[in-house]
Amino acid sequence: MKPYLVVKKGIDWVIAFLLIFLASPIMVAATIAIKIGSKGPILFRQKRPGKNGKIFTVYKFRTMSLETDQDGNLLPDLLRMTGLGSFLRKCSIDELPQLFNILKGDMSFIGPRPLLVQYLEYYTPEQNRRHEVVPGISGWAQVNGRNTISWEEKFRYDVWYVDHISLMLDVKIVFRTIKNVLVREGINNSQNDTMPMFSGSTLDV
Image (cartoon, rainbow, N blue to C red; front, side):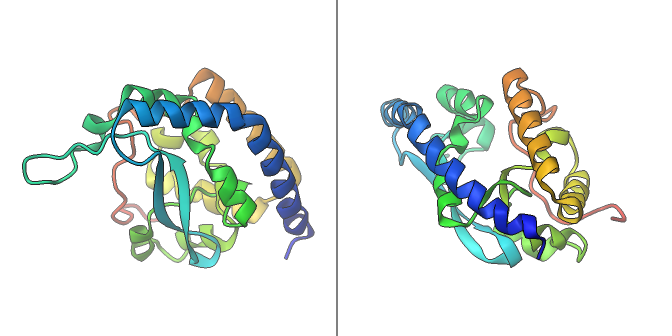
């Protein structure tokens, strides 16, 4: 194990604790707004694979309504995204509950984003290497395109990060993440507010 990974865990814990204290007014305001804005839970909870594929529950503020069609199926994401939810995503406020994931040790500030459990069966052995480190709120793929690049490109960035992880690289990603949030760069792809589902690579990766 690289010495930095041990230090990184301690840095994550201290900063997460401080940010929870500083961001508590924002989180309280978001909680009230979500509760008033639409029916449903305040938090979105979902199982995701973490380091070495270990499954954990990720927390985010809910950004979508629970509207269904006549058969009881949830409407597409684009139709369920609320105005408040869109704002929370653009400002990355919806990610704040993941500070508690960091305190628990399930996540880091920087690392490959934890994706859906159902994607595990579709990764190539090389793509699956993204699980060799603790997943993050932001990562090398996020600051190099986020939802504007293909899945294959995302995974290449993730694996590159695994091979080059360092303090300086993490600091670089932090500053680029802040810049992207401020200018709202790379948040949405050209057609959807969310990425299409991953069902396996069509390219030689």
